[in-house]
Figure 1 (spheres, helix red, strand yellow):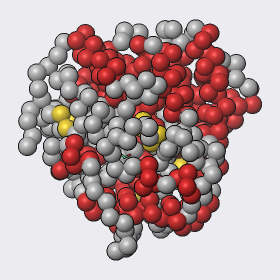
Figure 2 (figure 1 turned 135 degrees about the horizontal axis):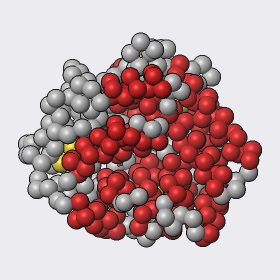
Figure 3 (figure 1 turned 90 degrees about the vertical axis):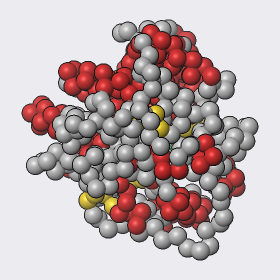
Length: 447
Ligand code: 2M8
């Protein structure tokens, strides 16, 4: 059932409500992604949470990222879930991944998943340092101590995950994209064949979301779980995974995020006097990642494409990933202005049926659009925030202001939902979602 957006809250109340959600979801040194549906720490959620926490306490924002890094693998990978010691009602649990049993690269404690997520942490680090209080020596020292693991993270992505052919960052599971069941991945997932030997499982997520239609389908879940079995068979060895897993996609959104985060981390490095060679390496990476995004972008339409690395097919879906070039910048102000216009136009943020301006996870103009199903239609405030951040950074301040105002219209019901119905603005998925609260705090803190 879809209900309309609830009562609207005044902005100061909304900021207080968002800060209260972050406090309530705080388990000491890590913030659970959501109190019931996601009772552990997620990687890109933690970075967004740190961006919000930076306004409340830059020190606590550091703690969030330091905790995430306790789960970092010896290879440099930051896993997508760092499990809390309390069991938490979530599936797949750590036992299903069995990472530490299968590879020495994974820490024994804390237990983690065996895949990664979009690398926005560099953006969080720069924002912590530039938020009032971030200039304190104690904060800079703590960022300085995180510097080597953050470099290891970026180097792992560059060596283990960048395709030698396209230069794009390769993902080996839809969960790595953060946009799990997006139509972006329909074609590559259609080639993931689930055998009868898939070990049994129960979907706990359905216990926490009122409507099954707001979550991925059972067919999706079978594929997600089967890919875990393939990763386990490869003992999570990076080279073996690349050679054997039946889902390998050059992710243009993740590539653009990594370009932007590399540039942000380089800027942060200059603020804390990080080694010049690291800052230079990050700057060069950002340029080469931006070039890879450029090469994956159709000059006529401005659409950026993912690449199915098993077939070489270019995949353009009506998702915000099409506008990946806006995240990292195109290098041409004319091209960029045209792309911003398209992004804000009828086929995306400005579709006439939308409740407010914001990039729907799938365009209503697409046959794949489902208004309530997870990454197949709803508006996700964190995605609005990311494009807002990039547009503002690249000088598209009017467009950025429209995204922020639109984002706040969805958020005004004070539910801090995981995602929102694009036409009615009704809250969907989890409530009191930490990253939603975090971007609310960020948008509502005067600069
Ligand atoms: C969602 O993903 C998890 C699996 O990682 C799930 O559905 O169980 C995604 O929206 C992902 O992007 C997000 O990080 C995570 C926690 O908010 O939930």
